[in-house]
Image 1 (tube, rainbow, N blue to C red):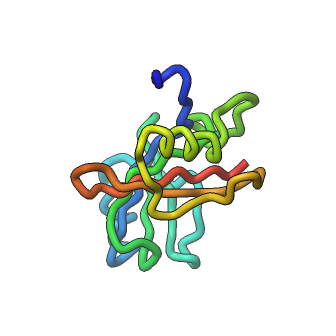
Image 2 (cartoon, one colour):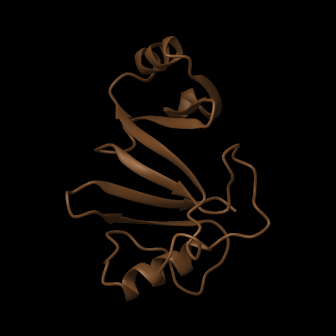
Image 3 (spheres, rainbow, N blue to C red):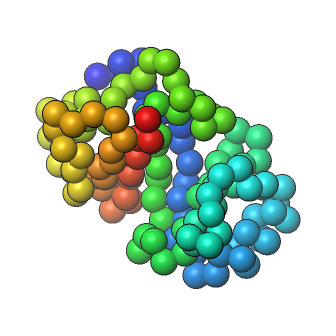
Length: 128
C-alpha cells in the first residue's frame, strides 16, 4: 500500500479541551481563526494557513489525529477520493483492527477509528 493509493484527505488535530472559549482565545493568539463549527455545540475548527485544529469540549476523551476523506485543505469536497469504507477495508487487510467501524456496503458520510502502536487515536471522518 503506498501513499498515492490511499488518499486520506484533509488532516487536522482534534483536541479534547476543558474550556472551549479559553482554548479558542489561546489559539487565536497564535494566529488561528475559526473556519467551521458551532461553539453552542461545543466544537470549533480553527485554521492558520494550511494548519487545522479542532477544539472539542466534552465530545472526546482524548486528543485525536483526524483525517477527512473527500475534503481538501479548505474543507471543500474533492471530486475523486478514497472512500472511508475502502480505507477501513485496506487497513483491516493489513491487520489493523478498527476500534469503531463504518458499516461496509453503506455510502456517503461515515467514520471509523483505529489506535496506533503507541495508543494514539486516529479518526477517519468522511462528511461527503
